[in-house]
Length: 455
Image 1 (cartoon, rainbow, N blue to C red):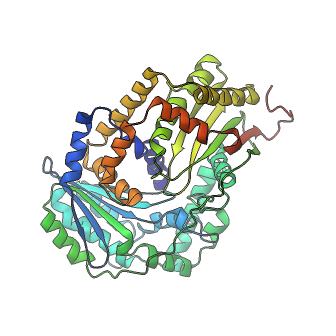
Image 2 (cartoon, rainbow, N blue to C red):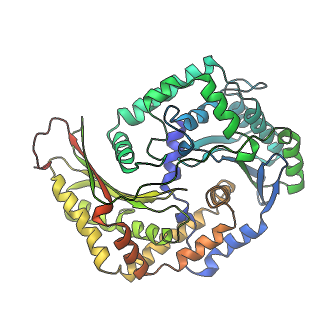
Image 3 (spheres, rainbow, N blue to C red):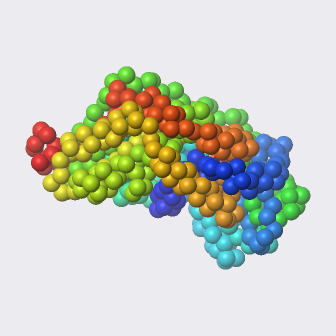
């Protein structure tokens, strides 16, 4: 449950949407934040990023482990997510869930999430408990209890989570089918939660080796934001983290994806009352210069109730219950996705025709100035919300450091979004949303017999 609640929220506000602001004056606070950052790298490789803020007696500590489902391989898929659970099961000094109980005893909050690229643990607590959370995190990162009993219990928990959130959920299972058919050669082809066969068959040796390599200090970014003194924080990290040994760099994941040269189409039958339509297009890695234009293109086409796709399918044609999409960017090749949930007795082929029509419109005609302004305003609002708390500022810094390799890249990304023009949006629509580059998945009721998948 931890994974799905937080991960869904994390996907809803993408990193790119936190970085755009139209006039330069609006993102001056971001520039100040970046310039106020203090960094320290310890001898064991731990990378510490600090931002002091004495406006309230609160701190946020985040541990960004540079490992996610892309760092797995067949046989251990989902093991990154498994560790999100295992890390709450106790260490040599603290029993199961005792870490959580201690944080909450002092009025703090904590959680974690797993993605394809990273696994993140975080807590927000009163600033006078800084030493406590640094100690607690060091304890579980160095001395986590890993035995057959704990592993068996957590495999049961995760397998049940998978049944509930994927196997028994139409939307979740459809996304899994889309992704596994979309990616052919990269390690993004399996789900973050893992395949059921792998979940049930992790060995203790698999888990111990993954923990040793991927949870070592040289593979971790610590982000600390709030009411503290940098010198004191460095000393406390040295006290508790300094003796944890580094490990060899984990093997690189498979990041290359074969270019798609023709449409792929999947018919997926499920026990469902209504059909669904999904489509995905190949886009490059998140550091590519076209990502800013692709994010804005997604905002105009399919993000939110004012988007073209939602307006057309839900309001005008009234054949869909919902419609949306996302430019899902990653460290490696990403997906530009669309999804439509139809109303009962609606024509799936009609919905598909409308989707292609809306894509062709933006490929042939420039978006309007009002659409650009609306998209920019939404990005700017997200940016402002991204500065409202120690937690959100830590996310900005941690995401930039983990995914761009340098927290200062935030400023470069803002500049990239500022420069996007209507011509850029049309160009990337033509380059990436080509019919030969799409993967289409239709979810139809398993008792449906029509060849048209409609009325």
